[in-house]
Image (cartoon, rainbow, N blue to C red; front, side, top):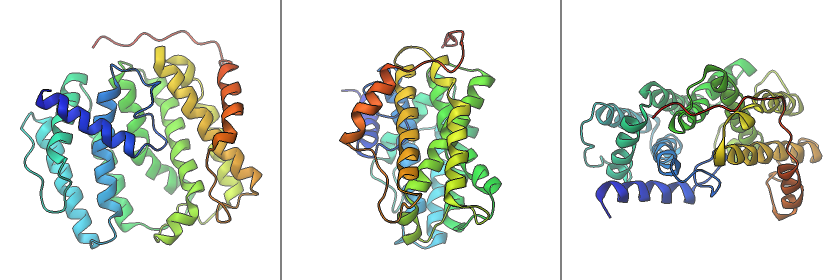
Length: 284
């Protein structure tokens, strides 16, 4: 196995071990883009861990994120990644070896990665959000870049698809916030805006899912089915929140084997939200 192949294999292991809401390791993900998506995820996973590392001071966590940003700029400029610094994961060299190749091969905008890092830095210093607008601004940088990167890795460059992707990614991020309210509260964070209740927040999140639904029909191949599965899973968690009378503190709403028949039925009977002209991926 070549060094580059080993680097991508490491990223895919990280993705499988930490799979959350975004399509990173599912068998539905097209094999041709799976390693590239895993490289993006491994980069973001490590940075998110820096922001969440409670054993370090806030200043040290910011320092780690700044170091990750410097590594990003280096590989984007086609300079080889350096050895991991203090408190950085041993896999840093492989993560950036794979990421640097993906950025170059797929012509990915570095600004999207910088947006992710800005959100992680915000996690270190901001613990409460006053308004819905504040939370959406955070999601714009913490979640939306991932969707846009996946689209570009798959060969799609379309402003309308970006808008749909942003809606789905924001909805997924918000859904994760609402289901993890009890966990985040123990960590000293509270993403529910001070100016609204959870029922209202869940309703707004559902409307974002609906706004982004056309994306699930605009892409083609396996990615179409991956996005449909992710969309259905996210909206199902919102259903569970509503069924629990919007009380995630009593029991964290998650998907279980009991959800499989309903999700499978909805997946098989999926109807496009509107007639869509199939998009052909841009030349790579």
